[in-house]
Image (tube, rainbow, N blue to C red; front, side, top):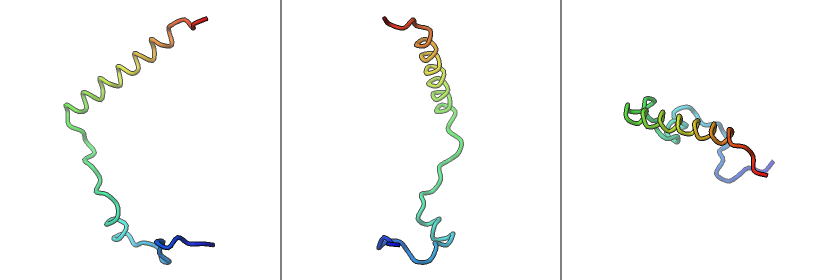
Length: 58
């Protein structure tokens, strides 16, 4: 089996893996951001429902 040259022979330990991964973001969006996301979601659902209600061309 060919190994890529950057791959280590031994597995990464948890400390080294944590150092390589990006820091996780804040799990809670701000209230304003959450409101915008909710508005966008409702808008997408409404547009999808309208497209499905239109009669097919032909």
